[in-house]
Amino acid sequence: MKIGLFGGTFNPVHNTHIDVAAAVRERLGLDQVLFVPAGNPYHKKDRALLPAELRFKLIRKAVEGLDNIDVCDIDMQSDGPTYTVHTLEEALKRYPDDDLYFLMGQDTFNSLPQWKDWEKIPLLANIVAVSREKSDPGQMAIFFKKLFSDVKNTGLNEWKLKGGKSVYIIDDFDFKISSTFVRNVWIKGGDISLYVPAAVAEFIEDNREEFKQYWNL
Image (cartoon, rainbow, N blue to C red; front, side, top):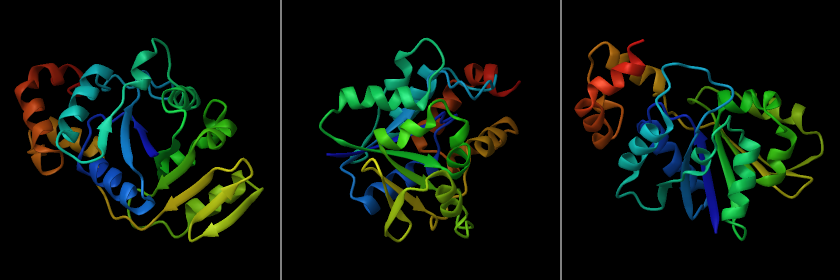
């Protein structure tokens, strides 16, 4: 099977996350996409970050009823900081016979050289980098070719690495919602049901006091 792993904090999960997961699955012919909410990401020391269990619960509600899109608790098993390289190593243990595709956004892709053991990541899984919105004039491709010199172009925005894995750059989506935007709308008393799945909006509203502890700082 071809399994996509969509990592991130998802604070909260929103419609663009769901749209990206579905669009990437269709374009690359993935059998399944799993959301992998970060447990305790080392690179984010944000007091507005919801607890991992709460973010996991929101994603569970968001993907309920969707075909071939689910949520995975790999990162939530760690008590300490979570690193992508460790996430992928654990994923290979869980899915030893499957071909893994790690999905990331443009901002995340651009920070790749700052990650722990980042050179190992494309040896563990194929990389799928998605631009935030339809405004990237080949910037990710230029950046990628600076990181990896020994690559072979195998298609439009597709490269094969020496280790056998591939890198796919998708720069023609036009999704604009961000978690920061959703939180700001909510803090100002706005209607977030326009930007998140209905079950997510309902759960946040029903537990408003709990969410205020983190988002009204």
